[in-house]
View (cartoon, rainbow, N blue to C red):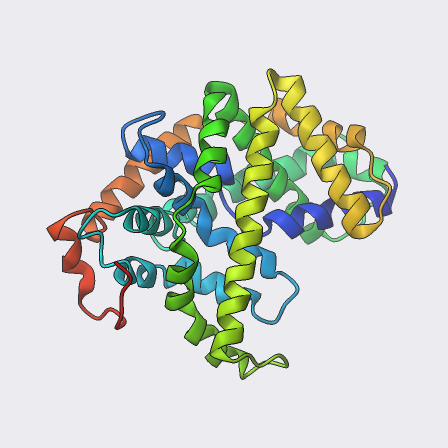
Length: 330
């Protein structure tokens, strides 16, 4: 594979996936396990657990890192402003899913910071990306691509994102129907969610933006947030549909190959072929371990953390209100 084609794939992966930990189906599986198994999670909970990653669409802007930290570290603002789950409304259900995603003690913590198996000093996805990079190096993949002497960070970023795709494939192979549930959840996510996430973060973004070359008013920050959340929602529907439309492993690999190839060609003007992407994904799938036990254990971990932090429906949820920002959407 030519070097520029390889870099094009990395850029495409980075554009849609950088800094995510589990991807869409992985997060959805975790949420369903938290609620007792396949099909048990509310649709808004399913969308909510994926929603913090809408900020990944801000990559390349001066606000990306700040907004990523907001949604992954200051996540309780969304819970508080939804009125702490006190009435178990649909908006509060998407807020609970949003919190379950977090990188401090939520699902992303296990993927990015501290795995529950293997090397616990790193996240599960990070460990697998390091392993995959070594496999590719030993197999001569990097040399064949002409980047044997290329930056390690570039290779690891590619492997990181491929690991996420492979885990989603593993989830789908266990439960084909989960893809359809994710499509339905994203399509019908509560209409109040954009206003909720805007109320939680627009003033903070506007204040931060004054320190950048692109200062925003509060209204502009709100529009910025809502625009990226809408783009993320649309991408989630498209992405999960690639799985929902497949009937077997080869079909889903083919759909993913075409999807990434189209992005490379239309967004970056690169001549990436679906077959080249399929080869990358196929090799990774053949060498990476099955992540299903890690996902199940992650669900148990997060379930306990949600209870410990009073992120529950009903009167007990209101206990987490102390020190919360003012204002709420009910």
